[in-house]
Length: 165
Image (cartoon, rainbow, N blue to C red; front, top):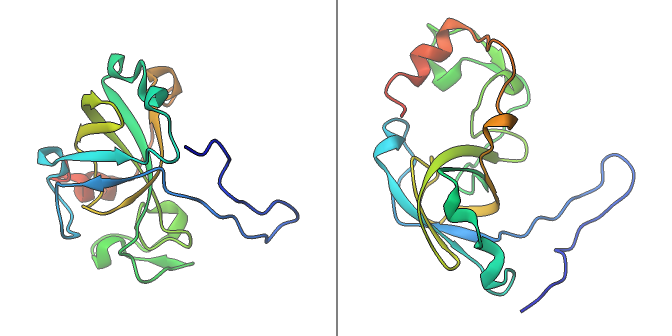
């Protein structure tokens, strides 16, 4: 079992960063489509060559996880503004004001329910990532890391998320 950190390049702005998946999503939804992710149950199978079996020790005490993953099926990226989900009824917003998969680094962040822990296998519900998705990191959800104060968001986001989970 390797205890070395994944390779990365450090230095000035514009350098490349190499990330190594710590596991993969197995099961759940196979195709990319929006909506009803709360009904999806999948497993995150962690890499035993990178993580010791004790890496998940204590995780079962948490109800939710934050999962950072790579949108590996996304084939395009945008750097400017567009209508979310190409819906002309919603305003054009910049890529940083949208949670689209078409981001420059194709990174996704999802909060999901932790159903079970079995060694290096995590069963989750509500993870909006498809079968085969590379998982870059898993963090237990701490309520204290949630937003402080009142949350503000535009009305179109409520419409977009209706039926999402």
